[in-house]
Length: 273
Image (cartoon, rainbow, N blue to C red; front, top):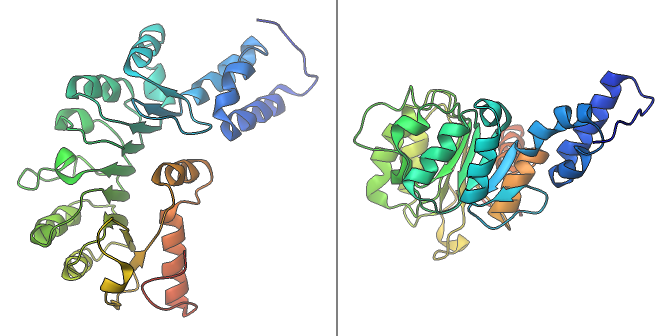
C-alpha cells in the first residue's frame, strides 16, 4: 500500500476521506488503497451498511452468506460489532441469521426483506432503533413483555397484511415498547384497526399506512387523528437507503405532514405523494 502525503492536516484529511466514504460506500475499496492511515479511517465505514442474501442496492455493499462468513473470520471478534449499524437481510435460514446477528451486535437499523424467523435470544442483544419485519417472525403476541427486548426501538414497520382480529393484540404489544414513536403497517379494509392502535398507543407520533395490492385509496374514510398518514414509497429498498444516507425517508415525510396538520397548513388523510 503506497504512502501518500496530501499536505493536509491529519484531522482535516481524516474528515475528507470519511465524508467521501459515507457519500459513496461502494468507493471505499478504492479509498483504502490510498494509504494505511486512510484504510484505518474508512474501512469500518465499508461495513456500516450491508445488504445480505438479497439483491444489491446501488451504492451499498452487498454479499451472500459465504462472503459474510469470510469477512467475519478475517476480522477481529469486535470489528463487525463496532462497524455494522444498518442491515437488510433477504430470506435466510435461522442458523445463518443467528450467525449474522451474533457477529453484528451493534445493529441499530434492521430490515428483513424476506420472511425470516428470529431466535429471541439473538435479537435481544441488538440495540435496535428501526425495525422492519413481519409480525410473528419477531414478536410473540402471547409471550413475555417486549419492554426489555426493544428498549431503544423508536421506528417499527410490520410488513404483514393485517387482519382486523389482530388489532387488540398488536396494540397491546406496541404499548409495551417504551420509546416507540413511529409505527407503519400495510393498509387494511378495517379502519377500526387504526383507531384501536392510535387510541391505545398515545405515545405514537406517527402511524403510517403503506399501500398493499388489494384495496384502493377511495375505500378509506378520512379519519380525524392527525397522526395517521398514508404514504406511497415508490421503492421500499430505495426509501430505506435514503433514510440511512440523508434522513429523507417515508418516516421523515410522514412526520413533516403531521407537523403541517398540527400547524393547519394541510388537511386530510391523503396528501399528494
